[in-house]
Image 1 (cartoon, one colour):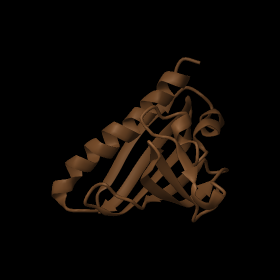
Image 2 (image 1 turned 90 degrees about the horizontal axis):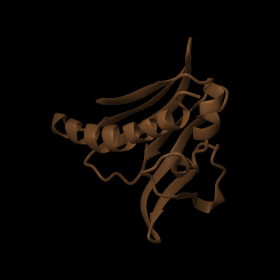
Image 3 (image 1 turned 180 degrees about the vertical axis):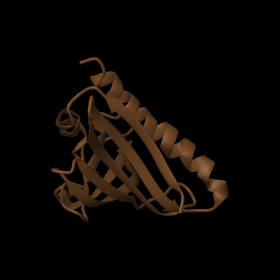
Image 4 (image 1 turned 90 degrees about the vertical axis):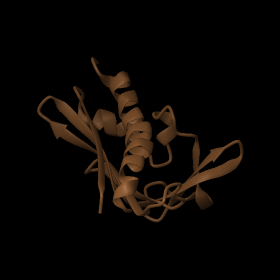
Length: 144
């Protein structure tokens, strides 16, 4: 099972970062490449089983289901339901981990897929989604 990992270290308190990224329904508020989302059936975005859907021009382009949301642990994980790539069981996790000088934000995923798809996933999700989002956090918080 391949693993995808992108991280960034920031010189700010973990709770400060978590206050921005903790909303499963608010990814677009801090990530510049993610379209707005809404919760299906007005679900509570902290309750496992809640599904967010991303909408572009009135069309749902992706759906993700919350698996775990842990405020005290500063983490949540979700499964990509509408997978644009030929992989299965794509489970992602975003977490904020304290470090001596601030915190580290980790965005990881595991999935089932052949070796030939690994570079595609690394580029599509790792570089074009995870890294872009982490860079946006760095731009927002680094040097504060």
